[in-house]
Amino acid sequence: MFIFDAHLDLSMNAMEWNRDLTWSIEEIRKSEQGLTDKPGRGNNTVTLDAMRKGNIGLCMATQIARYVHKDNTLPGWKSPQQAWAQTQGQLAWYKSMEDLGEMVQITNRTQLDAHLELWKSDEEKKPIGYVLSLEGADSIVDISYLQKSYDLGLRAIGPAHYGPGTYAHGTNSVGGIGTKGRELLKEIQRLGIILDVTHLCDLSFWETMVNYDGPLWASHNNCRALVDHHRQFTDEQLKEIIARKGVVGVVLDAWMMTPTWERGVSTPESTNVSLQQILDNIDHICQLAGNADHVGIGSDLDGGFGKEQGPADVDTIADLQKIVGLLENRGYAKADIEKIMNGNFINFLQRNLKK
Image 1 (cartoon, rainbow, N blue to C red):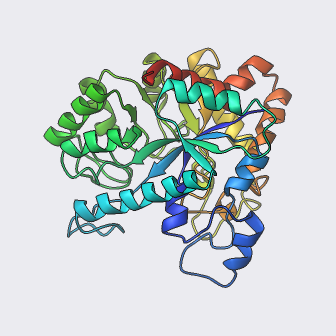
Image 2: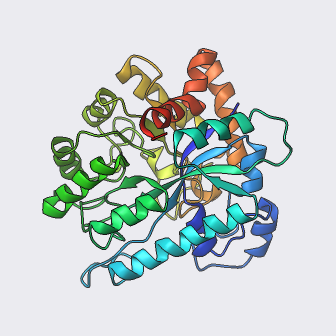
């Protein structure tokens, strides 16, 4: 089944982890043997080849570069200008993949429809389609830079990532959106960019709901009812997204899948983390919605971690195909499975991208 993945940090892996994603999974793992500079070395799960093997022909592909104030201990860039430059380097990598025929950027409905038709064809090596997303808006130096980003193809944006940001407060912080945040939301809505509410802390989330009336989704979020941490969304937040015709992409980071995970200690096997917990999150969102129209896949695979912090039954991203059979085993109809694996996010894009 064709799969849409709503959240992949492809350029971060290429630029910050120095991974050539045109290599095979095995080649990258072999090249990283003995490296200890980053967690997840030698445990990568995503390459362009693995995406093709898993029929994952379309994704939201991120730019990400955090600006950190002098008193912020999180890793990041010391000025918004540096953060902007990093995102532009990441965009340059995507463009170089286009030059190789490995990827193709999708910015409008016409391109989206053409790409979906291409992936129905028998062409041997199809380019991976990507819609550009910005995870955390701190690299938007001032509001005028959002127009620059839109002109370069940006179609979705999350105002915050981890910690306090320029435009909103994210995971592991507490605070609202402020004047700059409200200005950003106004410009997002004017340009017709999709608002990604993932990572907004509770206060920023609800202030955003008051100040924004455009298209929104949560590209990679799980349910707080299943894992009680503020990185996940409460039922009230999920219902708000559903009421606004949004979609929630369930995420495969192990600590968001089980309440017993201990960073640096737990393993997928020791905590019985598997795709079954992903189905639990899918089920929960479907129950809240009363249908299967508001949930999809936002795997976040290789998003700062590897298979050591993912489901035990996922060796590479191609294993997302296993979700299809697991949904069948839980009694999901084929039409609903197709919605979850691709249709809900694709329909959202078809409704909200310009021609």
